[in-house]
Amino acid sequence: MNKKLPQFILKKMHDGEKIVMLTAYDAVFGALLDELDVDMILVGDSLGNVISGFETTLPVTMEQMILHSQYVTRSVSNTMVIGDMPFMSFSESQSQAVKNAGRLIKEGGVNAVKIEVGLSNIDTVRSIIASGIPVMAHIGFTPQSLYQQGGYKVQGRSEVDANNLINLAVTLQETGCFSVLVEMIPSSLAKKISDKLSIPLIGIGAGPECDGQVLVTHDLLGMLENSPPRFVKKMVDTRSLLKEGIRSFISEVSSRQFPDSIHEFK
Image (cartoon, rainbow, N blue to C red):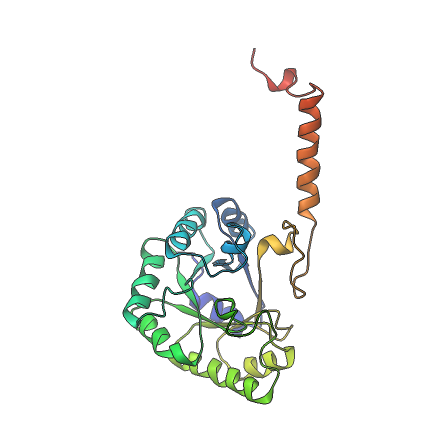
């Protein structure tokens, strides 16, 4: 079995290699990222923004997460696929959390789950891990707590908040998480957290000292109309290329250039 699993990710970190993680929500992008040998694919609840057109991730359901996980996992052979636990899928009870995490594994076909974590749900994470499911913990800015955190704000700026995040990361490691994802914190704090951990720290808007980086694939490809967050580097302006191709099709159909003899049956 050549499938990348938590042991592979851990080894890559200890070998001093950077870990690459990107999002996918369908078979096309799943297959593309798998072909390019990305280390981890996240079927993120960010599909609420990217695919469904919601302003936040909060409306995303378990059924959506399972369906999009199926799309991705059918197309992936080697890359580790992680499914996001959506809002309210783990907060009612530990048994609810284990059941829904299990659904992502059993029905969605993912290899691990990601869950947004605070001090209040450490035991929930512990229960999921105890059931045999690998967990990536998400700390720092957590989009499902958008309203509680006062909007899209950098976390961990004060000494108290910074120490709380450091202690939370260490606790999650002790709980058995195979990695921690940290979002929108000062890079100096990310380094302090990384220095405390022996499991990978994956950053998004957390600076260069993390063991790996994750972005929403549609953001880095410049596919979305809205401006991406400050921490996103747009690698290519795909949206302009797509518009150029569509405009060409409109023009050729309108001027009767398409379909021509090459593109018809005799």
